Length: 489
Image 1 (cartoon, rainbow, N blue to C red):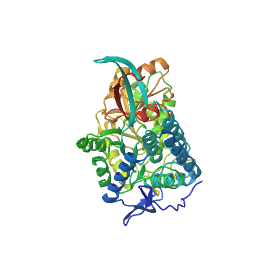
Image 2: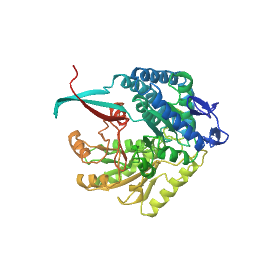
Image 3: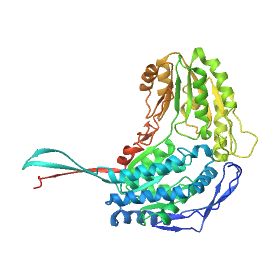
Image 4: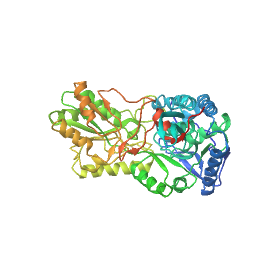
């Protein structure tokens, strides 16, 4: 499967169970061909208000919040409907995001759809009611009933880099828990969300208003969703800068916010590691999907005595990264999401070199169609420099040196972010001890992975609030109540 895709998709909003169009539209651009794939509805504030009111009505008046078996059945209908049309969705996903198609065989698409099965099971099996041990009260023994109930209406705001995965990461637990939602995808990847909305509307028994999809090219719609008094919680994935604004805007109504934000993940390579293998692994991780991943390894920390030799390996590995047509199974690195993004990245590379960084590989835009940036390696990076401190979301690796384990840990922790990272060393025990000292939500040690559907996934520091995935993600979408009552005869 390669070459320019042929897509015929009529993107529409999903509001109160109906697929609707709008008077205004905006272009959906393929970042590889640089051509217009088609046009997307530009939702108005009136559309957004209607979707929120529909979600509120559905939460208050339908059986969605109380009928766990019904929710589980509807989620399985969504799963089955998406499977029946998965190849259509695969083409849309690759075309509008520039994601290499090999990634859709895993987390980008196939595993994301499979995860709906788990959300369905949790909707039915989770213990929504439990009792604590009895306690003594003023009138005798009191029973203590703990209730875990849906929060209400959720505003779900998804990013462009993993548009299906991040959508389902939010939608699955929110719906499984009994909430109703209004979903707003990234303006860069609106069709994946519109497609899933269409499947939900046409192939499931999800009641009208439970799941709404709003698309738009600006920020007005998202702002209304975050601030609206009928919205009870916000689940957002994106940059830390935008996450701060969401927190501020949600404060007026004291909404719960679940935020998965930026990262500047460090890979600490210890002095007894297989240096060449570790460097090649890092270059592959940082360049995957053109660096557009919050857990990509974008800082490489090397012992000084191995520094020069490791840079030769990094330059060679960067030159070998296969980039190009995302529809080709061979492609490892697709384009940046937009020309604006590419220009931002090229400007950051120029600044890094101007601040004293040494360009080892890449650093430019190849002479080809598509919004590509070469796989880039920059050495002699200061720990305090912009390249070491700021999330770039690009295939650019900052390489830093260190003297001992303590300095490596200090450099890794010298960041506002705390999302992910890795440690590689000759001793599993030593590498694990170093990993324990790095303040991040997730860590890999010696190629072992934390990644699994039931793992807790979330960031520390300014990388976010709350936890996604598994039962942890479900419980983020529930609120806790307790009722004391006399023993029942």
